[in-house]
Image 1 (cartoon, rainbow, N blue to C red):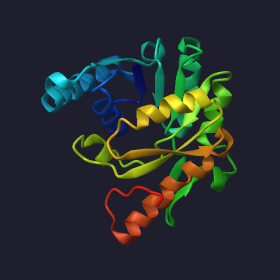
Image 2: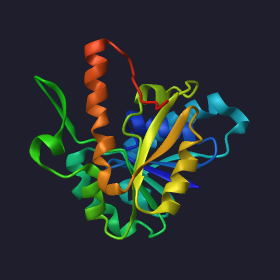
Image 3: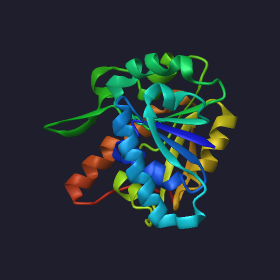
Image 4: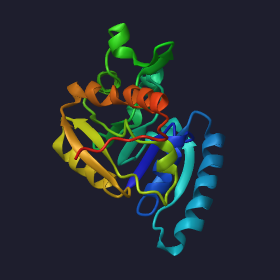
Length: 223
């Protein structure tokens, strides 16, 4: 499977690349192709030293458009305010069969702590805006409450759940299988894409709780 991560030079992108390269070919996408190539080379060196001959995939870098083209799974690890601009630049290069995944959380920080922008400013969820700007595409949301520090540490068992929202059951099944390849991460179906805000809002809640209670790298697990 070919997995592209737009915004892949960030912490989450690094974590996904290192976790999934065991079985899949990864493309790290950035507006700056040279930056993506450098990051991909660093990730690949880390992966080779960790997995050795057991690794089946590769990690390469590319620009946004090249990353989107021919992908089976496309992770959009981008800021909330960049959704429309990014979608405009890649929409014509995404295959209909491609599954587009949103881990995007619209939040900001003020004196009260971290807040969820759609609630504070009467705006739409990240998944809603993404689906609006990629009509007819298979959009799924997931990974909102995952610690990027733990994700990048490939020896770490995440021991967490991630809520998955979407309307295409085949896309959800395939993404759940991919999630299951990350050690200690369990996918839980939350519902349709229209309620993705329920998963997105958990991120500022977790950050506020971790800051007030001095908890490092929190996650969520239902028991």
